Image (cartoon, rainbow over all chains, first blue to last red; front, side, top):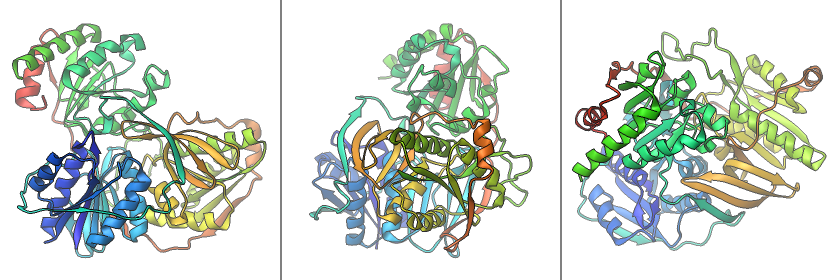
Length: 324
Length: 246
């Protein structure tokens, strides 16, 4: 009996979403007198062994595969689940998780709860999980029947806690390739080096039509880089092709919940607010004091983005230089 | 190609979400339901693919009650050849996927398209569930596709980038923005839709393994603190000391 977690690795190190999922898995295992097993690529560095040990993992499955495509992850997770008798599966609700979670649920014949934002509670017939619905305009408590479940957790929703287990078994999994592998013939993957995926970012700097044109985005990018933040935009901005669609946050774009969301020149239509209102702290910069975004913001600056942005970037740089 | 498009209806994006007093369901009074925007892209893409090939048919499939029929007529006005409605309350993603599978196995589909998620329950899993239930490859979060009817060239979003691949029909794909632009039905389409077949079939499976016990709204924000635009050091200090986010 075990909880099994998929831990994505990038450049040899565990991604932040991996740490969140592992920590969640350990907590789940402890609440059920079970143990936590983790699957990761053998490309993970030696340091990750200590990291997993420190988080409280009991078994670490490693496979000689980069685990960057969802077919392989689904296949190896199913193999590992059979090996450790996993009853609960935990993945982060990234694009990878969105592809893996439903297929694992079907393959294992167990229920699925996606986009979970709170720690699940035991209930009479199984358990209760909480997820956001209507693009963060509301929440739903979901009753899951039985003891088993695939759970995908929303990035930036769970803290990483240390529970040193003292002992961790590392198992090199050697399995035959799955039949599904190779049906999709991957030509190439373009990755933007050094760019933080929006859904995983702890800080996001976002701008709207108030920026007046794509040529002014260097102001947004400077602020983002000073904060190690990802950049985002409103729907009109992506519709006008000022910015790529994958930066569009809102109800029909990406839903995010970073620690810090800075919205510049975005009035705050209900669809936009839906996508960003779960952010921990919201800063709004707008010339119009009546902009709806100020109603959900923690801090507001009524002013012209072209004045405020360079000043804010400098202030952040000064702060960071003083707090290295 | 013979294409199946899975379609759900959702509250219009401008809807202020209100739940019933018992917290058990969405308060539907005054809510206008639209075709889920990502499903609309799936429908348009299906039509474009067949137009490029010069032949084929597009069937939209929906799991829901009769109140969705105006949206199914709209889908046919946009260009779908027929609609199938599975008469059931859609309450769980696995239940919906099982019903879709039952319909899919009765047709001989070369391609099954879904939206990448519905903007109401945001599960984003029906496409993946359906692919696995049918034993078909899944192209999730698809951003482009061309096909000769046998093999397809696709691109799709992955974490931190974009993948480019080839895949043979049949397969399941979920549609992301950028794939295409939605179409607006014209008068001729609206007239023709009236006589196109809308088949109602009964549900084949039980309710799924999950059920919503309570809905609630996010807590109201405590209020906005305005900071002098000339003093950005103050904002940085507040973000550091009070909010602890930098």
